[in-house]
Length: 237
Image 1: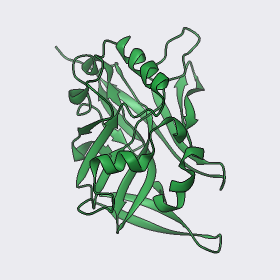
Image 2 (image 1 turned 180 degrees about the vertical axis):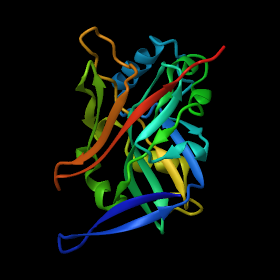
Image 3 (image 1 turned 90 degrees about the vertical axis):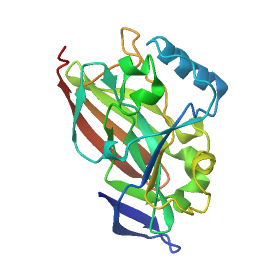
Image 4 (image 1 turned 90 degrees about the horizontal axis):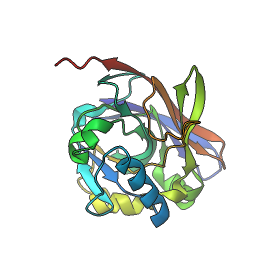
């Protein structure tokens, strides 16, 4: 069971909150979701540098195991070749769609021979807060998506942009589920990511021992933030 502290905007300008308990029933990861062809090509080239083959089309929808979803601040991965990426996440509960942030943490070595297989290898951390999607939908392009990683003993920006760089989330949702949520109770959809900001050595996608992911609403000054550490388990031959 996953628990979310949910914020709902009221007609009088105020906000109300409640906690939702959600049992995941279906989990889909949307890939290659960039709105701009140049940005998509950049991310493809970024992954090609790691040996990941070009996609057969886009967007693509990958089914993933429900057991991967979690809200822990500590994650365990096998080997040292995985890294996270911040993504807006839509889920359906109690008759409505909600928005939160998650990390599509991925094994980059496995991704080199199969993106679909790589989606099953690592845990997928989720924040514990969410916003009602209907409150955000009309201004989704303003919502900021960010991540930072602990690198060289300090926090550095790893990803930064807005949801304007990603296909409209409702179009991605409608490509995977009924637009009205019929049969979607307990469904989760990771909606794509942004390119990594290269470090001083010019390296973009890279592992880190800690990561922070965030959604920020500049209009309301509210944020959803989740931080997690990564324990690397040894590869035993």
